[in-house]
Length: 298
Image (spheres, rainbow, N blue to C red):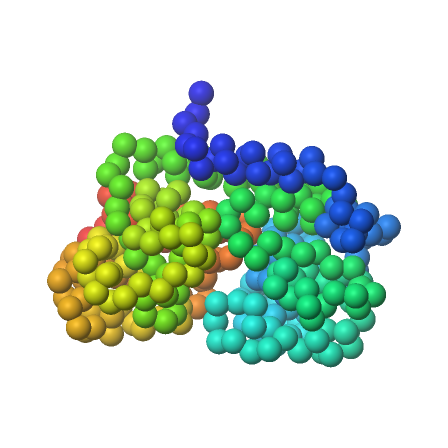
């Protein structure tokens, strides 16, 4: 029987529960009861846009958030939206409504702005953890008549997760500090980045925090001595991080294991099946250099 970790079983359980849940009459888009597949979708989360692309349904999307990096969206209308980890700007609700969408996909944080507008909305969990990926893809598959494609995409994701888990099994766990832009701002338990770090065989130094985005002091980070530092695209550069007071004593800095996610390849941070690809291509070799392709090993 293939190796499967508790994380893998938790993901499967979440998907089963989501698939079997009762329809929500206040959110017809969430359970595929739109009447007919939507043709004018405004997708305000990068994870949903990427999921739609994987389902072969990107031609239905008419607008995305301003900093969406998913290939194929370059020509689409860009909507200002503060619901992402980059530079914050308020949602331009009027710009959304002027497009006359028949479906909006947005995080629950935007309910005050978008509820009761007479438009179907598929609300995405604000937690954005790994356990939200399967329900989202399944909901999109049902709503868009792409159930078989959704099943194929999710099967591929599960297989890749199992492969990663087999590769890191038995290797020592590695202490990781992830920085989400502001120095000290990081990811707590239940967030996608924390889930990806665990999948790749690491342990976030903030992984026990109940907060989604805890703020650690510089002194605490130095004391916790991460072996690997992973920076978001909006963080300081690895060179600037190494020059912070006291950080020259951190193992990650000493051994040159400070890595930055590129702005054009940040799928690791967004809840879609592609996050597992980002985990495999970036986090696995950063956390366990012995698993990197031979050409990339130092």
